[in-house]
Image (cartoon, rainbow, N blue to C red; front, top):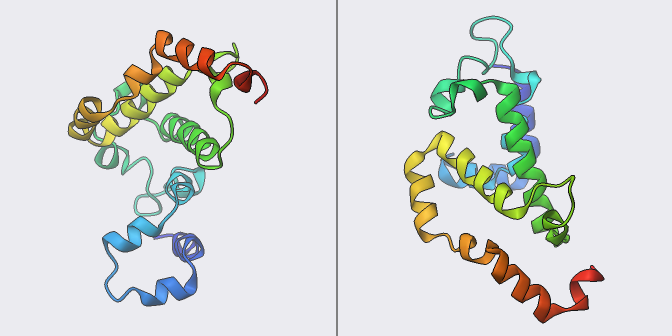
Length: 159
């Protein structure tokens, strides 16, 4: 295993928090950032020789349901990075309304569908569950968005 992996791991969690873990497991995994996980898909972890890195050897075990035409580290990284970028905009309270209005940006419904699809690459069961409990389709409906935009009026134009 590449020693940089552990440098990245420990760099993602403060030393104090890392020392508090007596049994690494779910809690440790939960503390890692989305950026940490997406960084594991970078070229740095390509395996020049068997046993030297993760990719391409772990693509199928980690992402067992990726369609064959997308089953490359580069394609998966591209999707995960797009999701990470969008997630960061949302979590940093940046406006995302323009995604529906700008021709160079994907609309919110498409982004949502791509997020669910990426979840399905790992777990089709979770994708199905999310599609049942997720209320985004109703919110994303154009008539609903038009009603919200009308209710907010100029607020959206000024954001």
